[in-house]
Length: 339
Image (cartoon, rainbow, N blue to C red; front, side, top):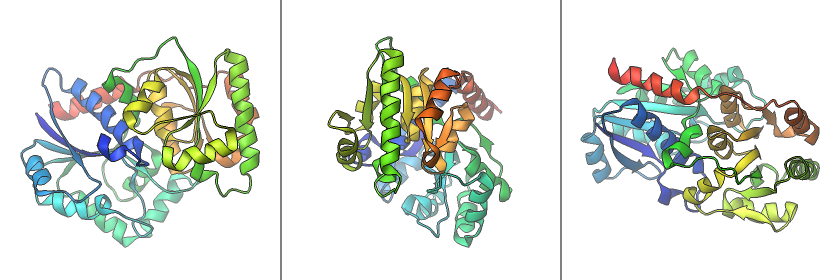
């Protein structure tokens, strides 16, 4: 079977902010490889961060399916939109190839919005609803990764299935397994701290959590700058010079096998670590973190984060013990491809 997947390529990521799209793609590839066994998938990776070329279109035309996977996917297009939010569907619809729209989430910079509030905001936009209808022309399957996206699609009477984010299983695709040689990690998004009035308080809370994890585990707790250009200088200023930074998705994923306890504002730092057995707390800086709830991962809004809340999770072992999400996802896609 030939499948084209519209995604973020490794070369897209270097210096780019959205590492999550790479991991969503890795996870989808692992899940579908398992679901379609013993049939082999011939994968064709297509970047969607620039207008599709004629070569891209020819490649996709020759495939059995096109996967539009990852990214938040669902947001109010009157707030912002890019080529891959809108115009790409005009190009894809010309191909007349079945499309699978997978692992879509809700994207909006709110720590506290509920799924209903998110859906209501998107439904204010006629453009958003028009583009959604356009995207359904050749779409044969839709899955979401969080209740935000699911609420919007439900409001539009669009059939979709809520599954754990495929980025959770990125390490499986790369053969990265948890080791006994562990550390702890705090990965923070500098942009969400930079102009906050409570920044200094939050910095002190995370410093307390770092010291606590080192004391309780006897292992170092490292600060990570997932995006070197936007995170590194600020994190150095706030937390000191010893910040681990990376330049691409392949470098950072190798660290994940060593992480035992993780506190992070970045969804796709935390999910892949959870996927191989790490103990994760997600700090919600926007609507994306709610995807952690589908995996029973504790989620704390950044405004509400205190070291005491982390201690309460740690001391009472309130970390996720969910272990069935991978097989559930494999079984779901197996049913789709065999029906």
